[in-house]
Length: 136
Length: 87
Image (cartoon, one colour):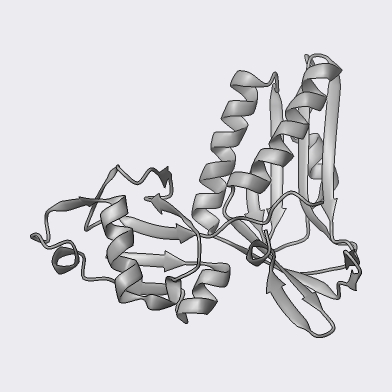
């Protein structure tokens, strides 16, 4: 399961997508909208994606996670559009035979997703918004 | 040639997509090709609002290096830094 979507993420479906009889370990990561950045209160976020490329790049990441990081089954879903504090922005599930590979691959996937997948985040505060990439 | 812009780059240029006369831009015939670096140099001349912005380039939905070729029928996208690793 690899998706970039505006609909809310069904976390149970993400976990079910990696079920398999040979995978004894499932590690999941959820990224949720935080109510602050530094000292500033965040009111909401806007996520913008280069949708078709984002899904292709996610597929490349999943292939790499399987070939080089010990993942056996992987699901990744990222939301776009306006998200409120507490909403789930990204969900990743990795299933492997044993837990070391599942933890390592899940960590690698979220770190690499944030570097490579063309999805941008605009943070909104009471006095306006800015793209996060404007202040690296 | 279609050139796609996103996030802060789209806001800076004022468009999410621009038409770019690739053939005359690279000084050759329309069917010819240029490198990504040559294309970016011309884009920066034609769209001064790109000044000061850093971005990677994707051709046909894949990241490319500056010395790779690009042709007039490609889908080119300018990719500003993505959302970062602070969460």
